Image 1 (spheres, rainbow, N blue to C red):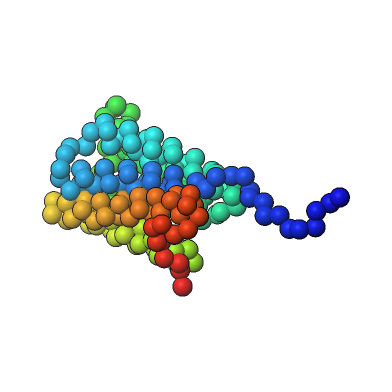
Image 2 (cartoon, rainbow, N blue to C red):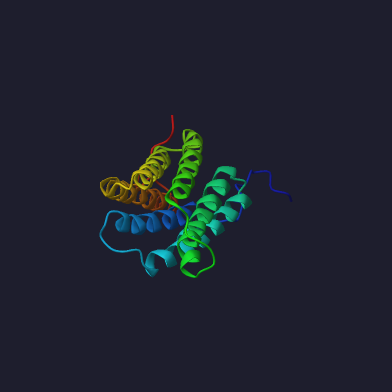
Length: 195
């Protein structure tokens, strides 16, 4: 006999958002502890940029594609490749593969990422408050970094570092909230439903 009661079927694909958000957030916090002036640029930051901020986010984005989530695909793969490109900008000149970018080139790079992030922010208006904060604070971070590079003002660069720590921490919170809320089947950490 064929059952007539509707059965809820999951798509069989795990939610990649906690991975992508935590990868972005943890790498962002560590880089911005450097930007705030607490330690030098080092291999820990670059390794996080390649493997967690970079590759883990690209993997999360590809999984989002399987879940038919265009926003997640675009955001996670883009920021994953942001981290990989940033590491490339730092490492390739040190290896003698090409010259280091001028400050004006870095300003253009950071402004493009700021504009892109600002445009993605509008997508978060249909998602949740936690993601709205992540994208709004990330937009501000890119602007502060660009202004810091264009002026050479150390105070602005350090301010960007502190703001980046807040941005990264908000992404970690959002990722962990998604994870715990799913595991427990209830709101453990609120993320705020979009209006």
